[in-house]
Length: 88
Image (cartoon, rainbow, N blue to C red; front, top):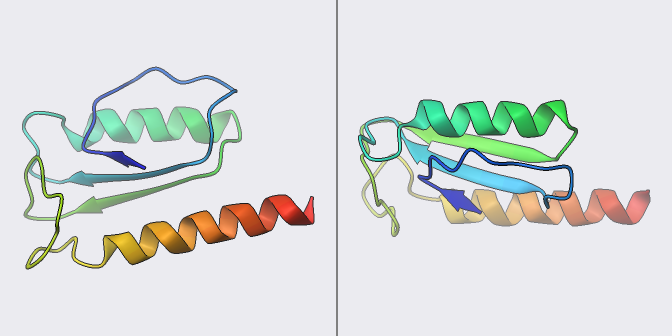
């Protein structure tokens, strides 16, 4: 899980990524995360990117924010990725 990062590097050896960012993050702008996610998609890495409104940097527990419940979303993503790999 990638959370509010501007880390731009990627490779074909990366695992699937579930990424989250706050729309108002001034430290790690969501546009940077978006570029990374698009690059991962171009090299066929399973990825999901959720961008939450009205949140800045560091919304870890998410309670009372637009990101509340993202933990469940991440579990569902990983469940689907693992399940899909078993079918291949």
